[in-house]
Length: 239
Image (cartoon, rainbow, N blue to C red; front, side, top):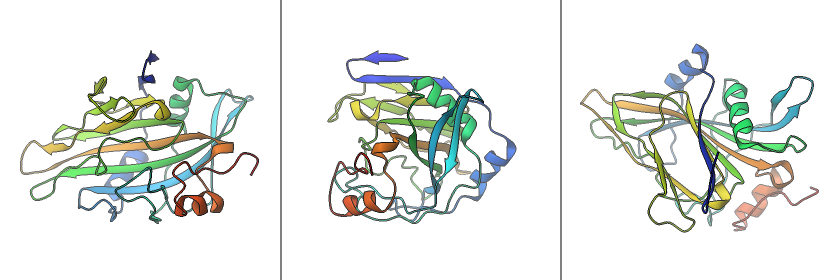
């Protein structure tokens, strides 16, 4: 784990996914909220707790709700409820590896947002990785996991000081690698992808947000606060 003046981050290897996980990237619905034709996505939310008997983290799928961010967090599409279709795979092995790498408190429960995405680049389609540009998502921790890179350059993940500036860390993640980081202490970004030729190319990844359960970004109360313009919206402690 790297601990710098900017916060904690680390690149890790993650368990290889099964063929069912990889096949799902071929069937993702188009994300209609990114202002282009380059992104496909599914989204689900989970409660995560450490299973002492099993010796590892376990995930509980939460009832499906739209994805929502406050406008203060996402100036591109914040304040908009985005009704993505849910994941159809089990992300537990890879996310548990991220939780172990971050050293999450095993005595606490955690709430996760998990996005399964494909970004494409093709003639007439720019491979924009992050439409909102360098940013912070307003979570405690984040995890970016890559499962495929096909016929592309770019897609380099960058960590930047809070408020922006020159990246202090850059990495081009290969399949079965992930970047875990302290979202509250830094900004992050990823460069656009570009196909190597006219056949096009793509990058397959998960974007995972991690928060303590008592500060979860989930449910009707969080959505009420986010829509009301509370940039630090989370469910109040004890709710």
